[in-house]
Image 1 (cartoon, one colour):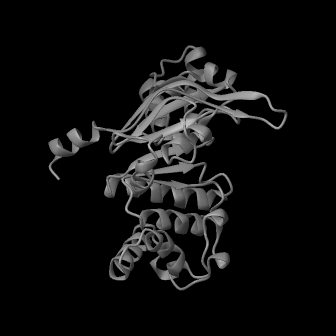
Image 2 (cartoon, helix red, strand yellow):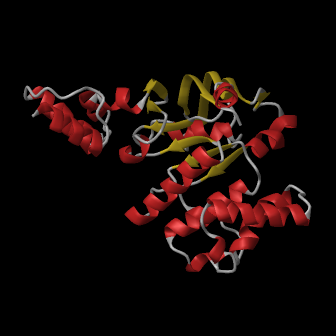
Length: 289
């Protein structure tokens, strides 16, 4: 794909959320508004991270992209298909796959390759095509060597990669990951994030990544910050994480490099704005001396 063609494609909307609200009834019978007048566009080929404290509405928002939930007010469309249109349900889900926090909730078979094949089998994909999809999905997530293993014997990170492979086998254009590393150790987190970035860069997949780990969010193209069912702001990681004090007031962490740079600037050091990574901080420190 030519660079110009790819850039044009990536500017096309994948998901459009317009004045969308979502309410539900709690156990006491009270109406609770989990999302309030959300406007958001996610373009093809983007890697968008959504951050916020517990109860901010980020997971509720993500579930609308795969039609696990429907808007109470407003609209959500995927590639122009309205999520309220029942006839478009499977069309939308074929384009948008979802990976959850606990991989054990998505793994249904006793053998890895059978689990990865489960989704396309239920879509009625021919057996020969299923084999091709399973092979490719396992290759992409680096789990080909484990295809005959039992999932329950794998590590948390390996299980999550199998869950991702199961989604990939359904050939989506977009993958939504709802805190996929929350239950993993540091090595598992690193493996899953590396896999997701490979999907984005090599497979040109649109990625929506829900996380409370700021070191993961800072690797996205764009960050959306949520609080109490509202989108507070969105922008490049450098623009979001330079607002150290406001993020901390929201109860969010910031990357260590961004926090150190902020403290140095307050102490009078000439440190550039927009520092997010350790390398950027190191380079800035070298230039200041």
